[in-house]
Image 1 (tube, rainbow, N blue to C red):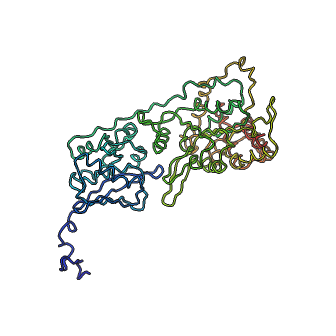
Image 2 (cartoon, helix red, strand yellow):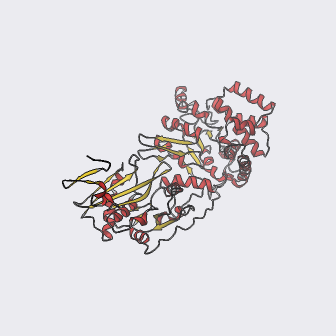
Image 3 (cartoon, rainbow, N blue to C red):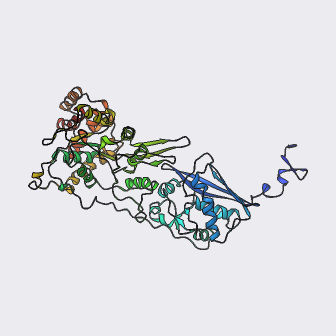
Length: 540
């Protein structure tokens, strides 16, 4: 097809070199615009090049590049929004390519980039004005910009991509105000974006969002709990080191109340923790648009009928599950044994690794998942096994079948087990109020400060004891001779696994931190081992 060193093509019967062909093939392409957008896979942002080609001819609007239904429907929203600006596409054949072509694109956040690309391709806007701009936003039929999910992780992922600015919907202004490394402008509609890119009228910058952590849940206090000294102590130990907790007891003992009081004794969110929690909540569409940032530790309490994907995450477009939505907060699993066996077993990997990996044929998404898990379970199906006043109606087979729903490997991953006995109703009127949440919280904060200091000094790789490895525990929780003797005897007597052994050391380190001592002694180990007795006794 070519002759000599120059490539030649046939043009109207003559063989001409490519450099002499008329039209855009030998110069700057006509009717072509490239716009920058973004899409999310899990919490990872991927830069998308929206390439729009417009030619004269029969009107059509096609889209390629592995676009899902929501993205393909953008052509209807874009055409309607442009019509409101007086731009009709009846005489244009438009092709939109979303690159890279092998990355699946979902959501409506590409609407704005596609609309601006069309305007650039048909000559209504200078494509050069959009070269270094990230455009995010969903369009309504009248051209208004609707808020989108995942603004914070997408803007965070745009850092280092040599972009000069970003434009997001005005409804996402508070969330966008958390980003300081990239100039972010907010727009109410498509017309305002066009005027900004044309240099007619600049859009307002997203105002800086201030972060003020909340002190906890208003209206509830640990002082409302009468009695239950062992359960209160278990809550304090669990909160001090972010340890998972299992409460076992009959109905009405206060398990649900105790779990809902955990946020009142946890330390406030740090700014780094708030950013992580906000990114996850943003992907799920749960961020308050007025605040734009999560200021309190999340508290999630899914019903026991939740699906596997609802609990750990999943879906065709991967979305975070409850265990990730509770990241840096509390995940409360009431009626623990009533959850689906498959859902509970799916929790094992997140509880061990602190993250969830959702693998699909075309993508793999990661979500952080390091909540404080509080589980509550009855000792038997009827709930009254061991009750001093009411007799259990369950047969031995029913009890075994009920407890078999909680596998050994799952219980192994819960650091502290505590019995919550029934409360004597007559003593409620005479029993004095216990310590308030503020008092317990001060002790928890002091213990967390010790853990933070070890983290800042580089002694450990995590700021809480619940995530320490065995080698780190050898450095910061070395046992004396009495402590080693006690834990070795406990391992032989109770048949603790290697994982349970490590978790006992973690809890012992937290108990020592609560006392404000540097060394882990035998009494600390003994209290930590006591938190495994229910597992050895079959929760009975």
